[in-house]
Each structure stands twice: as C-alpha cells, then as structure tokens.
Image (cartoon, rainbow, N blue to C red; front, side, top):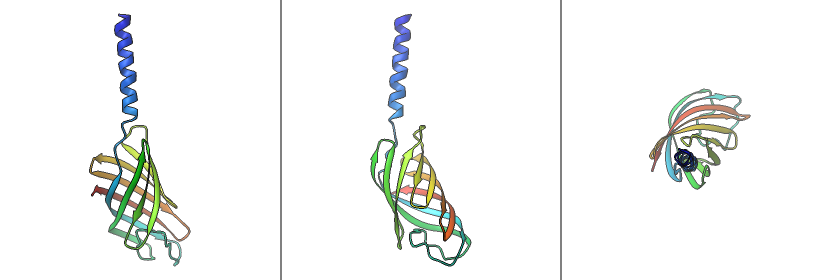
Length: 142
C-alpha cells in the first residue's frame, strides 16, 4: 500500500512538472485583424500607434497588423508588431494555465487566449497622451 501511494504521488508530481513546462509555441509570423474603438484626446499624432486610425474618436474594423514573435524562452517571449506605417516592440508571458498570456508594449497591454496552434484571440487596451484604444484581435498563424 505504501509503495503504491508513493508511486502515485511521484507520478502526479512528474505530471504536474511536465504540464508546467508545456507552453504553446508562439514563435513565427501571425496576421492580426483588429476591430475596436478609439477615443481621440487631441489632434496630435501618436506616431508609435501601429493601427493608424484617423485622428478622431470612432469605431474601426478590419485593421491588420503583422505580429512577429522572434524568440520564446519557456513562459516568456518577445516580438514586434507592424503595420504599413509603424512598428512597435512587445513582450509577453504565459499565465500559469499555459493557454492564456499577457502582452505589454510601450503604452498598452493585451490579454490573449490560445485557441489552437493556428489561432489566438486577444483583447487590447492602450492609453497614451494623444488617444486611447480598445480592440479585439484575431491572430492567424502564417
């Protein structure tokens, strides 16, 4: 009985350790489609904004970005998001469940869910002196 319980505990510990390090591979190129809303605070231009919507408050749909994740080290990763007009670096970490992650960039952050090996869905919040953006994103692996 004692040996069987020890084997059971050891297998549970090994399974938990294996699961704890089982992060999805996010490296590579992803095409992101954004639908959101922007609140314009003034008529200035936020040059770093990669979604480049007009300098006005309003809804936007179908904006596209390229998300390039160049390096992943276990639970953490870094990358660059690009539009035709700008690019911005970002960094992210997987949460403890290994299917959700958070991303930060220079003035915003995303909460993301891995749907499959080819699809990720994110909700983005950005606040800067010029404008604020909220958008939902669907990433498709290229």
